[in-house]
Amino acid sequence: MSAIEHPASTTALDTTAPRGAWGDTLHSLSRSGTFLVGSTIVLFWIACAIFGQHFTPYDPLASDILNSLAPPSGEHWFGTDQLGRDVFSRVIVGSRDILTVAPLATLLATIAGTTLGLLTGYFRGILDEIVSRFLEAFMAIPVVIKALLIIVAIGTSKLTVIIVIGIAFTPIIARTVRSAVLAERELDYVAAAQLRHESAFHTMFVEILPNVLPPILVETTVRLGYAIFAVATLSFLGFGIQPPSPDWALSISTNYGLIGGGYWWTVLFDGFAIASVVVGVNLVADGVHGAFND
Amino acid sequence: MGLSLISLFLLSVMVFIGGQVLPGNVGRAILGPLADQQAVDVLNESLGLNRPLLVQYGSWIWNFIQGDMGTSYVFRAPVSGFIVDALGNSLKLALVAFLMVVPVGILGGVVAALNVDRPLDRIISIGGLSMTVLPEFVTGIVLVLILGIWLGWLPISAAWPSDAGFFTQLYYLILPALPLFLSLFGYIARMTRSGMVEALDSDYTRTAVLKGLPWRTVVWRHVLRNALLPTITVVATQAGYLIGGLVVIETLFRYQGIGSLVYTAASGKDFPMLQAGVLTIGIVYTVATLVADILYSLLNPRIRLRADQ
Image 1 (cartoon, each protein chain N blue to C red):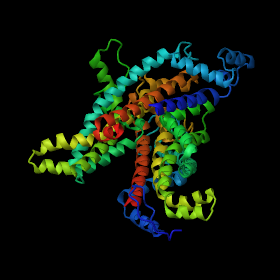
Image 2: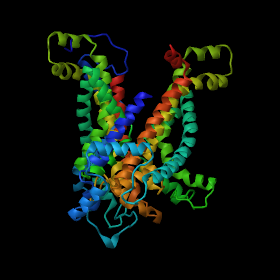
Image 3: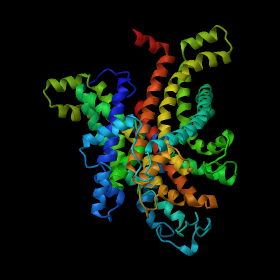
Image 4: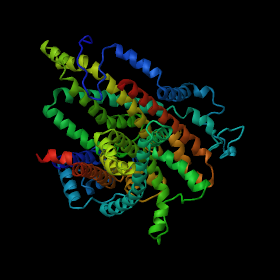
């Protein structure tokens, strides 16, 4: 299949070169500065999430009331919060929940969105019309608001947040995949598969899917950044990750009321941590986008 | 136009499902797990929740169109009054943010485009986009710490004194508007920049330069005019999203807008309020998108001509 050459189309998403292209892509990724910086940051936080608990100077959940709200010092590098918990230790392991919830939500959205995009793009017609209308209306509500409505209705838990964010991002991925499939289905190899009387399922998932993987991969990495954004925002509002998790956004939400009293260390380090991971993922996404579109 | 109406209808169905179908037993959800079953039944009865779903949807949407958005479970008062006040406050905040970000964003894009691939362009483009991807509560808190607490320049709450005049209100709104500014600046600057780069490269710009017009005139009269078209679409689209991003900002700064209204309603499981708030935001977004489309075609004779033919 990959041996079939087709004239390069002029769409921006066209990256469907022969197999060797994946090697080229990896090569240009390894030379992309933004990708390397971004993946270093992200890998650092993943390492902290997995191994961090063995290196933290204190137990992230252990409170020490006598030592509450202590400013940063040699003993507590980032100070302590209102329960006397060590902020440094909490920041180190604070990536754990968000780095499981956000990627799983993105994965869910990618699977559901790819399926919908393949179906609507391949069959078009009335199905496409109806589904596209629904997705468009669904996209008219900002993600966080949608998520609030559903989470309040069915109750919050990590699984709820994964499902809600996953559903919220599905239309966006579906739209990307659909437009890629629309360009792809006109090509000869699809006609060849149809002439061979391959099933629609085979044509969509075995013939077309491998050729639309690059835009899916780009969209997925971009979505991951937004998923972290959305999960953090929900946790800040109290509808995402729940206490006693040392989650960054949750810590900011709990301690935000204190900053008027000058206890800046209870929120600032968590804020920087969120900022670094979000920027890191976006740099990775930027690098992936660049590597596929060069 | 017709498509927008279909979108709005589907939107209302989804909001109805989210607020009235998904919660299952609304009476139980409000009163909590320990409440008496009889009390739950009485509440469900009085809220009209044991009628068929289609009837519930019909009466809900019919009343909504006529301006009756139901009665708040928490405040025991009509929802519409709260929505109108909150929407007014949110528009005030959004307006302040827009008045700051649109000129500065466009200027940033112009400066970046005139310095393509030089350090200044890199700073504006990369810096702007990095700010755009950060959650508003993170930038908000850093700004509160720096401008509100350490430097003491701006008030950290948006709740101004009740007798505050126009300029005092404006002063209180600057700090809440700044995170919104940061989250939009990158988009607007990027769109202006790419529009400018394309226009700078065009034949009509070359003609204008070759016929001896001063560079300044070329940039402002020929390049920028064409470059702003995509920017206008982005601005209008972001207007809808801005209303959504207000949830965080309004909660953070204790500002009584549509975002904090949705948040309060969500925390108190006040479904009529929540539904009305979410639907209002959806309507604002849909209208903003429609206005963007219309504006774009009005300002772009090329599209207008095509539509006329």
